[in-house]
Length: 126
Image (cartoon, helix red, strand yellow):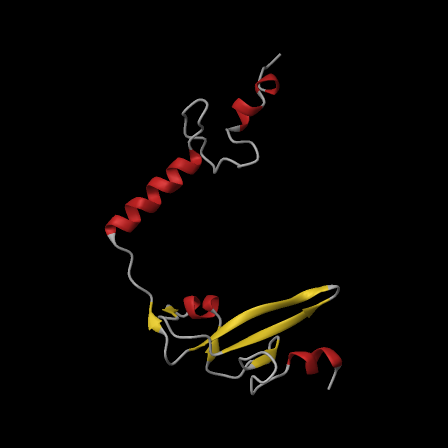
């Protein structure tokens, strides 16, 4: 067993308090939030069943929490109110606060305004 594999393998949960497996070695029947979402499921309030660790060089390991697939619940359907709220939020992300125009793209937070307003000297044509 390699050193990295051995540090991440704790199926009884004695070292980390929760069963721990190396990256890509989780047993069947467990999935991350993203994997559940891809199947149209959500954790549904269940506790973390296990975790996977991916060791990294000179930094702490990456951790992904696992949930039981058999106890997962279906994703709640999108309601008209939630759909309207998301549309309003996305429209606000595209609206320039300086010229109040729809930029047609999400305005970068680094600029804080659309590109023509941020760089007016470059928009002049000769």
